[in-house]
Amino acid sequence: MNYREIFKSILPPESIITSNEALINKYGIDKTKNITAHADCVLFPETAGDVSHILEQCSKKKIAVIPRGSGSGVTGGAAAVYGGVILSFEKMNRIIEIDPDNMIAVVEPGVITAEISRAAEKFSLFYPPDPASLEECSIGGNFAENAGGPSAVKYGTTRDYITGIEFVTVDGTIMHHGGKIVKNVTGYDYTSILCGSEGTLAVITKLYLKLIPKPEKSTDILIGFNSMEDAIETVIKIIQQKNNPTAIEFMEKEAIDIVVRNTDLKNFFPSSKAQLIITFDGKNNDNLSLKVNELFDIELISEKNTFIAKTEEEKKSLWQIRRGIKDAIGLTSPVYFAEDTVVPRSEIPSFIKKIKQQLRDHNLHSIFFGHAGDGNVHIDILKDNMDDEKWFKIMPEIRRLIYSIALKHGGVITGEHGIGSLRKNYLSMAMPQEQIDLMKRIKKAFDPDGILNPGKVIDLDV
Image (cartoon, rainbow, N blue to C red):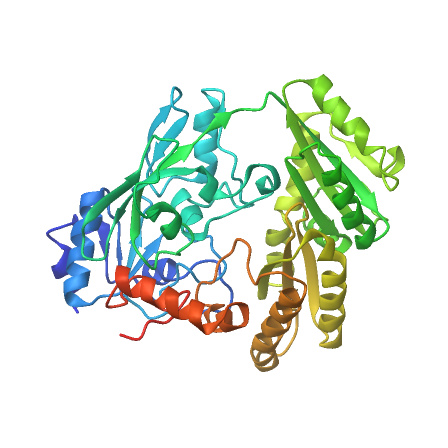
C-alpha cells in the first residue's frame, strides 16, 4: 500500500515515514520486552485536523491505526503488533494554557508529564499524578493507561484530574467532552469511558487537567525493616493514623541492592530486608513535624531505623533509588517481564510470600517493589541466563500463576500498566464472559471495523 500517496495531501513529506527501517522499527514498539512488532508507516500529526483527516482515510481504507505517545509503556499498548500506521504525537506537544483562575491546564497529548508539573509550579499550582517515568512519559499515554504513581495513595490517578477532552472518532469526527468545568452530568461520561481504554476507542487530541494548590512543604522519610511483613504491618498503621501520607512506597532488599550495584547511590539501611519511603506534604514545617513525630508512636519505627531527608539533595537520593529500579533491572538482565498486580494492602505480605516461593520453585529471579499505600505490587522477573526456549515457554504459565494468586487475595491483574497486547488473553481470569462481551459491544460502537489499536485489550470479531 502506498502510504505516502495516501497521506501526502494531509501532512508534509517530513511527517510521513515509510522507508526508514530503523525509525519504523523504533516507532513500532514500546518498552515492552520480548514483543515482535513492526509499523508500516509512521505519521506525525500537528493538529486535531491532521488527526481527523488521517483517521478518515484510514477508516475508508481499513488501515490499522496505533496512537503513540513517548513509547514508555510495558504491556505492548503502543506496539504495532499487526503492523499498520503509527500516529506519533511528539509534535503535538504544546502546553496550550495554564489557567490559574480556574486551576486548569490545557495540553496536547504529546506533552511530557513532568513538563506539566513544572509549568503549573510557576503559578504555585500542582499536577499530582507522578508515574515513575514522569520525565519520559506523555500525558496522552497517561490518559490511555489511566496512569498512577507514588502519590496516588493521597491524590489519585490520572482519571481524577481530567475535566475534559477533545477526541477524534474512527471516522475522523472531532468531538469534545467537558472542559474547564468542575461538574458535568450531561449524558454519558465519555472522558471516563476513554480514560484507560488504551487508544482502542478514539484518539485524544487535547486534555483539560485539574490543578490544585501546590503544597508549601514536604518531607521524605526512609524506614528500614527486618522483614516485608513488618514493613506492610507498618503501612497499615500509618494509614490508620489518618495523617494522609502523600506516598508510601516499598522496596525489598534486592530491589535496593540492584540499584546500588549499578549506580553510586547509597543504601541507608543495608542490613534491612525491606524499606519504606513515606512522603508527607502540608502547609508548614510545624504541620509536617507533627505527622513525622506521630510515626514514632508505631512500635516498629524508631530513630535507629529511620532517616529523615533534611535537604533537597537527600530527598532526591531517596527517590532516585525507587525510580531507578527499572533501569537497574534492565542493566542486570536486559530481558525481563514486569507485572503490576493489585491486592488489598493487608494482603501484600502473604501475596508476596506465595509468589516468591512459587518463583523460587521455578528457579526464577524476581524483584519486588511498588506502591504499598494502594496495594500495587510490581513484580519484575529476570531472565538472566535462562535458555531462551525455556524462558518463552514458561512465561505464560508464570503470568497465569501470578494473576490467579492475586485474584485469590481479592486483587486484580493490573493496577496501572494496562492490558495491552500481553494480557488480553488473561482477561477471562479477571472478569466473566458477560463483562468481556459488553466490552466488545462498546468497542464495536466506537470502532466497528476494529482498526484502532488492534490486538490490544480485547480482540474484536469483525
